[in-house]
Image (cartoon, rainbow, N blue to C red; front, side):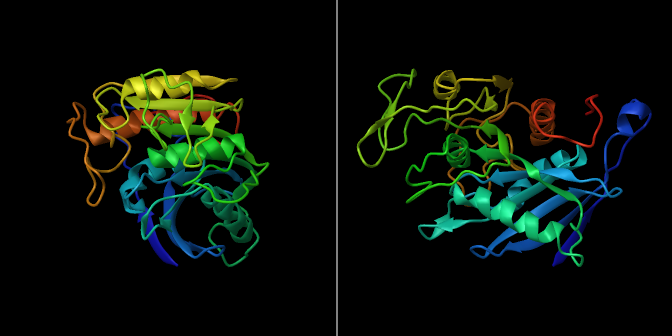
Length: 292
């Protein structure tokens, strides 16, 4: 395994030391998901023998996993094992629902492997999913237990450990068809059947106010379809790539709408909002108090 060490620098003059002490140092590994051979970056807390919930991060279309390292490191410091795979489909970077299952299966292997740096660190009974753009749509359908092309072909068996999702720059308005308005109460899948999202699991919808790819109206319309616990969070000034290390990552379809906030600030806000909501449903080892 290739190993990186991420060093967290805290300026105590500006940070409450009681809060700062709850943040955890983080290390990273590059592993292979044995199920289909996908490479994945794993960010995990360096601490005692406590176990931490798993978060699978589903990449946006054509966005390499390397562009999610900052959000991965940030979330891991809150007390999660964060796994960010690269999945190829149709000859390009494009995730699917089964990546979630692949991540969980590999974490079971790593947690039980005494030679793995993740040995004894992973709570494989508590899992969340984070999706960006197309990865968010894949995550939504996985939470529902549906199998919707092009994110799934055949049958999807949702893991029992999967309990919560957070999605950035995501909507279902244009999958297989055009939205007739911003109120996307349904959409046509590639098979031509009308389909409504039916999700009762906890979901956090995070939307950049300057997103020119998945617009705030489209995101809000999909959000309104969801039942159960849900939160809609606006990141003021962020565009479609507010979750990635850089704006308009190389190889990805660019957002012509320029961000009005730094990548660092938007990533910090996104990570904080995800942690605030995930900790309600996943057993994190970081205390109840939030920190920046």
